Length: 233
Ligand code: SF4
Image (cartoon, rainbow, N blue to C red; front, side):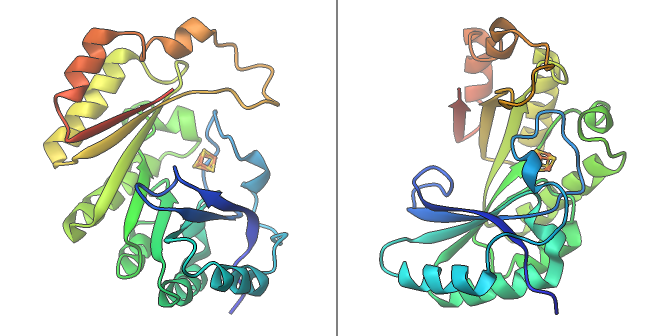
């Protein structure tokens, strides 16, 4: 079996797994091509820069100092069973396991649900606008299936919506919110679109990017619908 391909590592974070001190392992490869991607260097599957066994040994040295390890990307689940086996080894060290995912691999997520304790799932746009944002026609249906599968596990979940004004309006946001509420999602995060530093052609203004966060009526309406709403500005 091919080793997992790791393209990055954050050794300490308090914001990537709710309430826990964590490390983040970034895996290479992603089936999507989102207009706002903040990790373009991780998109293509290739040889990772980090030796997975050295990362594992380092994680072992963090036992008792960190509480969780989060797998991110790219799209970590693209690495399938190889990733699941690696996560199992990390969990056996005593860590909580987190996963940031775009939901493109529901069957793999289902397999991983035995090991993963918490996920942050991207819900990127309304169903109609998904293809233009991510460059994939079937991505919405896959994400939707992943969301339903995860909800069935009863495990912890944060659904994340990044408000890129080129692909989402306030009405779109409310449509997404209503869908999440009707499915029984309890915790969401609404994230500001921040252009990647190399993207000189995004064509958005601060006013457009801030519009979701400056609208008190919108915020209040959304805040009442969930147990937890994080506004990441
Ligand atoms: S899913 Fe994430 S890593 Fe993949 S292209 Fe979109 S933003 Fe980038």
